[in-house]
Image 1 (cartoon, rainbow, N blue to C red):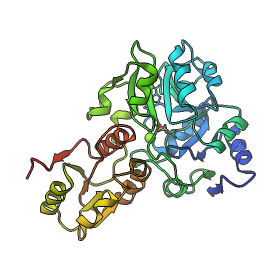
Image 2: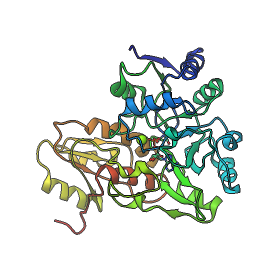
Image 3: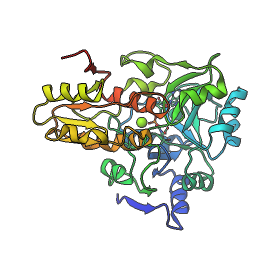
Length: 344
Ligand code: TXA
Ligand code: MG
């Protein structure tokens, strides 16, 4: 199959994309977070094709992408007022809500669960594609399963050239890490995945939030978890990653003591001069955490190279979107962190 790449700026792109989707085909779509690999979320055959192309475990459910909050009650029931409050505040935007699913949502989409995750992406063309298709789009991140997420059309082409009919090129994703996921099906709202909407911002609307243990620790692959995707080793380059925490000076001293040729250093732009000779790669500026979230996955993909032995990574501190960057880096490192303030 020839994979066509069409710019989001071409006048016919939305029409061509929605026609493929209506006919049960797959289209890679840009969103503000990462590129998604989309299909009609109500069409079991089309959804099965997403799992096949990604190599995704069948029990890992997909997010339904809607074009507005007015669609929530078509696919969900027992919707708490908080869901509408969150949608009013954060949609379109990088927030996904887990709610009880109506029967019209196929079990293939929900990975067999009785709940469904819904989100409205903040991308004008992608919302237009959803509107024209007239169906909600099931769309996981467009990477091959186990690879870092895709934040450019080229990343999607690298993973799926010849396997899907169309990639819509909307440029670099603005946020760069996947949406925040909050589960609203229990008594207390639960954060399943940090993302572009910070826990602090959620708290302003919800007044209460439990952080799921999958956010802060490595989960055994056989464990029963709320978001099945959290237990798989995601976002991970092929070689071991270790996060080196502590002050700039102490971290540099630690890395220089342990560095051997073939290792790489993933650091902030401000730190590049400290690592001359250590093959450093910057993923953004520490002083501007939005550049770190936007640049992280492209950097992890670049480091996903068998010639790299070991990656020493620097991680931002603090809340907001830095919390999501910490989560993705810790997952890439399988929660392997050394504190350069105390460790030799
Ligand atoms: O930003 C995003 O959310 C991107 C873009 C494309 O929208 N999508 C994305 O999808 O990250 P994916 O499939 O890579 O991650 C979805 C996560 C998985 O961890 C999955 O287990 C979880 O959402 N999930 C989906 N439905 C769920 C449900 N009903 N209950 C709990 N977790 C769910
Ligand atoms: Mg993913």
